[in-house]
Length: 552
Image (cartoon, rainbow, N blue to C red):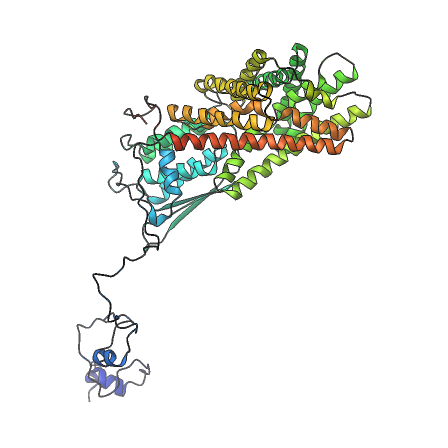
């Protein structure tokens, strides 16, 4: 045989016989005829029935085998797949409701039970890239969470942004410092997950309102906000300066402390002394912040000047109410915003975030306690006469106290960097809160905890109504309004009793302060929930930064 003929390809049988390199167990045995195909390997499932075994299998396998159906099986009577025993509930969404209510309703449902809305048609041909949409969503959620918004409201906003760009199967997750979101187009496609860490927190309700307007425009099908436009507006929010300068914030903290001292029975001298102590404490806190000290030490330092001025009055035997000076300074420091947000997260099921927020509140409170208790202890040791029973001698001055409560709410709104258009509303809301509290506690002799809870409930109700009218977040209308209800006097007298070695009496007073704080937080949340349950639509009016009027 020639060398050229040796190079010719042999048949499979010849190669299997003569080629010693083919030793695989998948090689075709000799004498077995195999049908020739097109030359390509055929893909067959491992669950398919081999040829020639159909009839034998049908005779050999008993009823109930995995390869044949039961005799009583009928396609017409077959049950629906994946149907729970109780049936699938029919869920209807009010299409003209605010996006917060619609997204919150959908977030509380499992993914498989969420109603599929009509797809939103955007100006882009193929739509934006999924990673960019998720990144925009995380950046918006970061601003909301850093601004003090509740975890459920942050998730609702993130879910609304994703749905506005056509990403329906999304699952946002919010904790105290971490935001994440997952998008899975279908059950057979790989999910895309992105996360972002919240490292800095700042109180700026003007920026918070701007973020809410952006989300409101994104959810409007007629607004047609592109992804680039959303990024541009988000960058402008980050670059914008605070609406109030530093000196205005210091002055506001002083006026807040002075107004709070009037609420607990102080006169003009007490007003001035409390204002000076609070402004000095605010400047010291700014100095500590500039040196990079944590907020715990900032609260400790800020609590010392008002307490020192009150002790100085007691040592000088000046005929003024020294306890009102210290109480006014405490009002400017109590973390009411973080407390309300923490309790709200706990009531809505976000227990990890709620625990972290309440732990933050506890650390701030401990810092205030250390600062005040240190000054009070040394004041008592050197002969300062401070009366823990002065709490029972608070005079009821309705007109003056209502005015003081409104000034307190106004200055609190300035400290929160609210928009100027919302300051008047929150001032009126704070006046209503104190009027209700005074009528229940001083006139009807109802317990302070119950009176505080009712007043805070009205604050939450009116705040939610104003938020729907303004198409904004409810925080700017509620947080500053609860300022007059904060338990500053109960906190001070508890610390004073501990400084005078009356630990049992002091713990009782501090427990009362904690009860008042919880009553405020629960009342605000309950009022907001009642508003959502009873009011399916909002007030009519023009929405800002929108192309049409929508009356819900």
